Image (cartoon, rainbow, N blue to C red; front, side, top):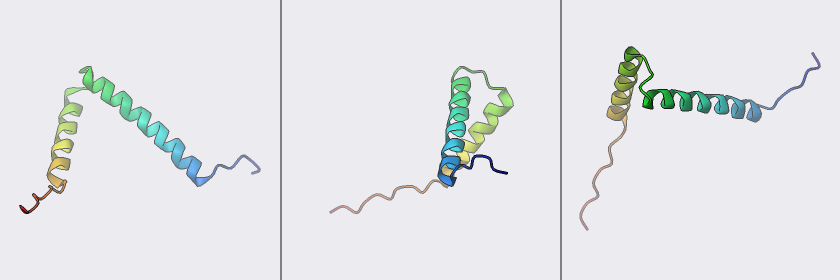
Length: 63
């Protein structure tokens, strides 16, 4: 086991690069209308749930 060892930081950078590429492909396919209907519906539901969980900004008190 004397193979090359990569650092934790490099492992995370590699994983992030792969994940970003996959998300970009998904977004391109979605914009082109190429995703199956059931996947599109799942994505819309997840986006709706994320919007509902996002904390809303409270208006500042008038000065």
